[in-house]
Amino acid sequence: MGKQRVLSGIQPTGNLHLGNYLGAIRNWVETQSNYDNFFCVVDLHAITVPHNPTTLASDTFTNAALYLACGIDLQYATIFVQSHIAAHSELTWLLNCITPLNWLERMIQFKEKAVKQGENVSVGLLDYPVLMAADILLYDADIVPVGEDQKQHVELTRDIAGRLNDKFGSKDEPVLKIPEPMIRKEGARVMSLTDGNKKMSKSDPSDMSRINLLDPPELIQKKIKRCKTDPVKGLTFDDPDRPECKNLLTLYTVFSNKTTSEVAEQCQDMGWGQFKPLLTEVTIDALKPIQEKYKEIIDDKGYLNSVLKEGKEKAEAVANQNLSKVKKVLGYLPPL
Image (cartoon, rainbow, N blue to C red; front, side, top):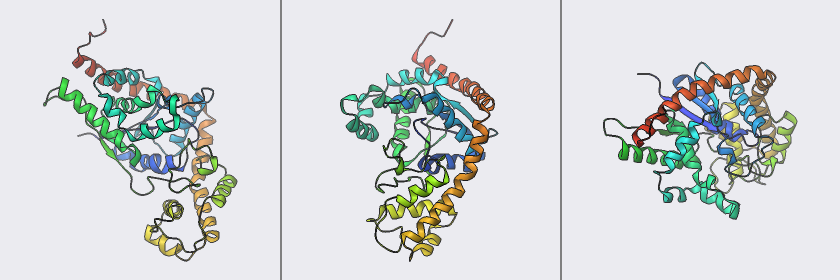
C-alpha cells in the first residue's frame, strides 16, 4: 500500500501568524514524510467574508512562499492555489445539490460569523463548508489536519461523501473516499495576546493580538511586552481563571522544546517581568530561520511561479479524475 494522502490549506487573508503555524503548518512539516501531501492556498474561501482585492494575489503568493519557508518539502508535498483548479468550484455546485440546507445552518462557525456580519452575510459564508468538502474530496484525502474549530467541517465532509456514496454509489464501489480529521493536541489552539479566551485570528482588528510569522524581532518584543497578563506571581497551566497565563506558557513550551512539566517547574515562582523576556527570546529564535528562508524564496519569484505551476498540474490531474467520477454517477453527458 502507498502512503495515505493529506489535504490541507490556509486562507490568504492578512498575515500568517503563530496560530496558523502551530495549529497547522508546523504539524504539516513534522509529519510530511509519512504522507502524500497536497497543500493549497485556499483563496476561494478568502472571499466568503469582505476582502481586499488589491492584496489577494500578493497575499496568495506570500502564503505559498511561507509554506516553503516553514519547511514544506516538495519531495513529499504538492503546493497549489485553489482557484487555479476549476474543479473546486464545479464539485462544490454538485455537492450543494445533494447537501440538505439544515446541515449548513447548524454549523457553529457560520452562526458566529453571521452574527458579526448581520445583513451583509453572504451565501458564500453559508456554503463555505461545502467548498471545504469539495477541496478534501477532490484529492481522495485520507487525513485532514485541522484545529478543533474546524473538526465539525470535516465531519460534514464525511456526511456529504457518505450521502453521495449511498445515493449514487454501491457498497463495493464508493464514489468518494471518507476522510478522517487529524488534530494536533499541544499548541493546536493558540489564543489572542489581548484576550486569552479568544483564538488568535487574522480577522482581529488589532495587530497586537497576534504574532505574525514575518514580524521583525523588535515588533515581537513589543507585542509580548504589552500582551495581556495578570498581577499574580507564579505561572501555571492549571488555573481556569488565568487563560492568558496558560496561553503564554503553552507558546513557551512549544518554542523552547520543553515538556509541560519542565515549564511548569521552571516558571512556578516567576513573575511576568522575568518570563516575558524568555518567551520573547525563544519566539524570535524560532521565527528567524523561517523569515530568512522566506526572503530567499520571495526574492526569486521565478522559482515560486514554477512551484505553483507544477503544483497546479499535479493537483489538477487528481482533481479532474475525481470530478469526472462524480459527474458520471450523477448522470452527466461526458464532454464530446
